[in-house]
Structure formats: structure tokens, C-alpha cells
Image (cartoon, rainbow, N blue to C red; front, side):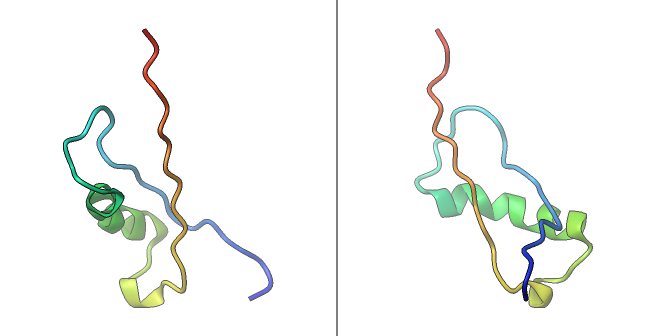
Length: 58
């Protein structure tokens, strides 16, 4: 592969979460991301994740 492609996107629920780790936060977004891209799990060569830890404005 010579070019990277963004083919699907989704996000977890917004706001504070009581989940213990990033993996637990990412899991619910996996199926909608694949559906958005129109691919099956076996079609995926790599997954890149962006985690934002922005502090809420007061």
C-alpha cells in the first residue's frame, strides 16, 4: 500500500466515562466504524486511534 486511507469513522459516547481504559471506550465504536466504511473486520489491515484528553472548560 502506498497511500493511507480513512474509510470509516465513529466515536464513543461524549462526556465523562467510568470505563477503566481506552480499549473499553473504543469497543462500542468499532462496529459503527466498520459499518460506516462498508467493510468487514477481516478487511481491515490496521486501525489508528485518536484519543483526546481535553479538560472541560469551566
